[in-house]
Image (cartoon, rainbow, N blue to C red; front, side, top):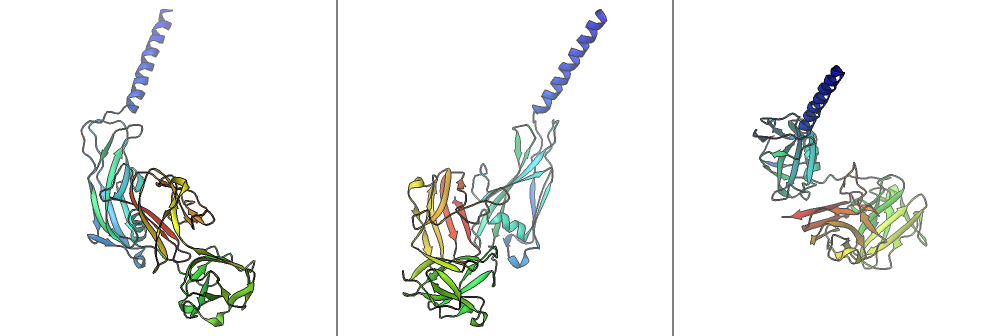
Length: 357
């Protein structure tokens, strides 16, 4: 009996020690140690990214390992980026680097991060840092901050028939080779685009290439298309129109756009009133600088829900490509923002929401 009691006592002590060790593993005490030191390797101090050099090396970030005086767990690293002067509590870019101590960027992969922070084709500064953390612990250490002067670009896709129809008309001299396009991104015969018809009595045809010899679509009456056919005429006069065509159903439509606005819980007007955007007639793009609060926004035309854009996201996050009727766009932090909606180039729609510091 005494032997059994002794064995049970030993087992209890061992269990207590084991529990204590496991408890110590999750309650790591971080004392002393050196924070990671972040450095960069780049060809130039100012990085002007060019699409023609997309596959070339642009930037390598290296950091030293975090070493604590006392630790029983491994260290994971996160790379964070914000616009210079921004808040790292809500980083524009955050990448889980695991246990890696380096991150290499090509021009293309760096550009993908830059355009999340800065407007394309604009020179600006980005701040970068490394955060070292131990799993199951709230304690972190933070590296020094590096500032990068960089200019990103928008990748423009060029389309030809059958992915595009050239809208040649009296508003631009009936020149198919110089005409704006409507585009079928999915190559399914359904075309979409925004055209600025600056003639008081707009007329046009939809040309299957850069010259009239390629053939064209015209008006067959009552919203129908025909090969050849009459000139399409717009009775609502000059202005920007959303123009669509379906060459499978042989139909077309045109909606005159009087304005684009921003609406949503993040705006002063909530979901009840648009905040009107400003048109740049030269590009057909829209912008607005305004105060936003945490919430959501969408874009809509003509102060109505008939034509609206959200973002259905890609790879789990916003891809800055507006989708008709897409999901609401989240605004994480209060502040003053510049919001852009770029729809002047068919097949290359883009939006950005950039916080101003």
